[in-house]
Length: 184
Image: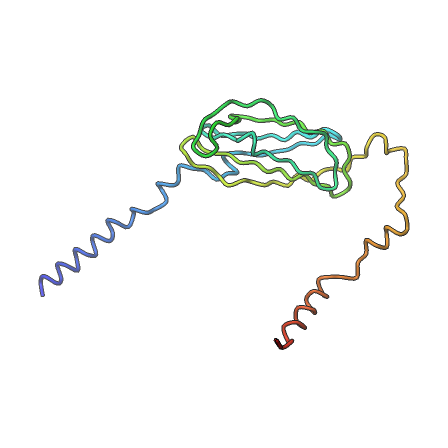
């Protein structure tokens, strides 16, 4: 009986010793992506500046930066030269450290236009973050040559934009299909 009690006490003590083995402190050396790569933007009419403040010990990949406009037209974006770096994930690549400011020229942006910015970075300690995507809302910008010309949409095009299909119809069709028998 004493041996069973001793074994039980030993078992209870050993579980508390090993409880901290898989805790988060081993992983806490890496900060969240938003803290490692602080992203900010500032727009002044046609000029938009995208800025990344990159924490020490971290870097952004040049070839992983993508800018996609929605309801806007932008000039070709020229990424500045980076520093060459060799790593296990992408091999020899250009990277940015400390700070990156990317000027973007907006040629035209309608109301509600956005810019989708995708980027990816890693830590020097060997941890790569998944690609991050940020949406930048744009102020309305009128194209220089289009400011004096009124835009008119032909009557035919306006009617084709209003399709009779909606989410309600999709739901009703789905319910209808669910009740049809499978006869083959």
